[in-house]
Image 1 (cartoon, rainbow, N blue to C red):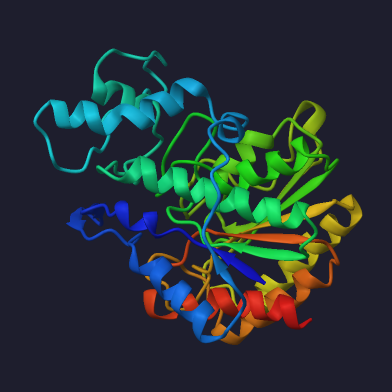
Image 2 (cartoon, rainbow, N blue to C red):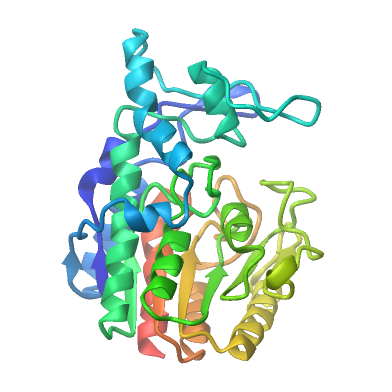
Length: 342
């Protein structure tokens, strides 16, 4: 299995986030991808290649142009104001406010964000751009005939909607790849999101469509981020009715509970019979992850990869979350090795 990787991810390194009422170092840090890359090489998973550049067009197939223009130019506007700290929102157009786009930078940032978990730094745009190109390169490898590929994306993407950033995510790498598959001839794409947190951005992008099946296993949003999407009654709307499946699980879920949900997910995907599968590969389901509450252990990720392989479809793995930095490489690569060895 080839791994696609760009060192540009180091350009994005938020200084802090608010956790339990305190400013703490960001859990989403460059060492996450560094550990995964080191494990890929240690295990000799396959060739590591640099991404191509597929330009803006495939990104605009998923994200609104006004959002992209804002995101690309936000740091320069911030710097022109004489600021050098992370650019973070503090006001959102909540229920009793109007959803309008102000002229002010902070107002626009609130409009294009759903939380305070996506700080913009001097290198964030380039890092996110390159992550999208990483995913698109993996998509191209599979379109050219590869059975699998690993897009080692950072920053992650599954919380990013068409015109919203949040949850450490700016551009939705998995969604961009899925749309590219469709644009290049696939009729049906399944997205399997195994991250601990619900992929609210991915769900919202494809919610009214039948050409993408979105299936997510995640912490129950009644107690877990992102709180406002990820419930079982969200099954799609319009043409997309029946093509969105959420499988929320209780805090403390072990492999026994999680694998049963995975089986349900795989049965649905098999019934859908997609041309290709995009796996949003988050490994924050690990028992020692600092911001998650599932109890999977490292050997479980081998079995996860093996079950996905039994679907018998070309599969693009797109890196999402996972914050137990010392173990993230082992767990992510275990999924890939399980898939390859099945």
